[in-house]
Image 1: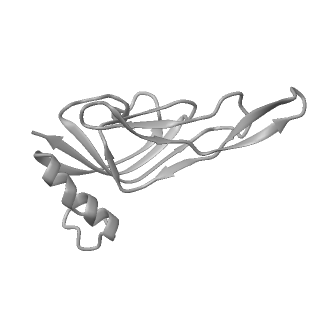
Image 2: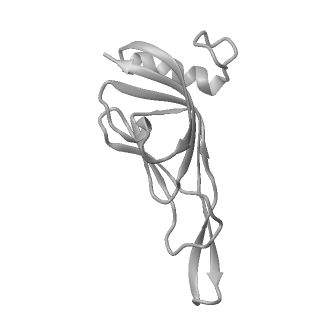
Length: 135
């Protein structure tokens, strides 16, 4: 689905799309796709006039080396309050250091909205959806 007429949308997309106009008044909706670095993109900065309708979101890390900490992504709502938290990891035993470590897997989710995202260790993101300008 790459238009705003929603004829070919999935049932989940249609349900969320029906809820958004009931909650938010918006001026414009535009297709928005971003693939690139986590730092320095507009998805990480809160703006009260913007809301992102996400069809697909994924985050990745550039190495498979076990880490001492796990990775996470937090999505914030229109009031800049955390409302969605995603973790996708596997725990492994590091025989050299004799400790448990986290092996990151790619994050992935679909069909939700947010105003900004923050992520811990993940360095690359992919977003496909729409940007709404809130009244």
